Length: 212
Image (cartoon, rainbow, N blue to C red; front, side, top):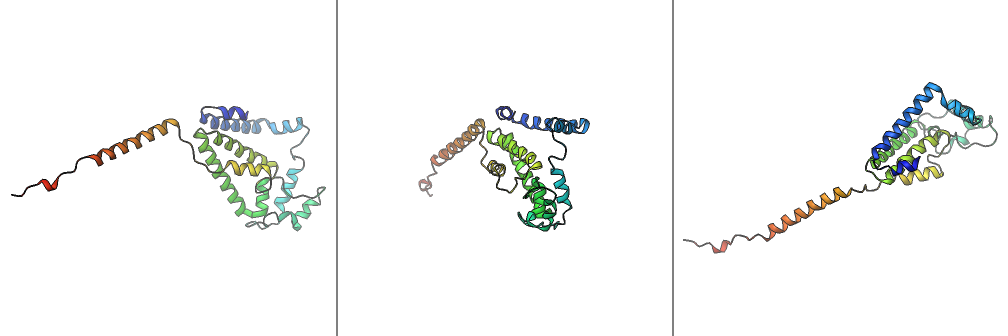
């Protein structure tokens, strides 16, 4: 599982395995509809306990498409009361992090969120290719956060998943390999040696010149 990905010595294998796993799941889903089989096996259906109904009703809500209703404001509006009447209890999320961002911030907020996630994904891949454990864990957290926010809302919420994602995406210097450090130190020592030898070279004695 994830422990084996962390212990892999070749970081490029991590990306290859992640891409291969995604392609296999995608092909099996389109060919055999494995999600329906798995859900029926655990006693669930494709509505994800009513989540798909909530998504459809939230998408039909007449919210400002460009800027949304404001941060955490949608579920206190008249649009949300229509949805809440169809379900028992109070609701404070659409159980989809990206849909909630659209409801709160419209296309502007959703676009900025997508750009942020893409930037974090590229950063995680770069650090993974440098062979750091931190980069590999960050890549796994990034993938899990996308999967998690498909059926729950954690993005920009007081949720452990969002806190862990922010911590793992903090930029930090990428440690250099030992060979690169040795080569860099050798170049510095060579430059210092050349500088010292140049400074110690005798200067021409101009005062020793004699005029005719």
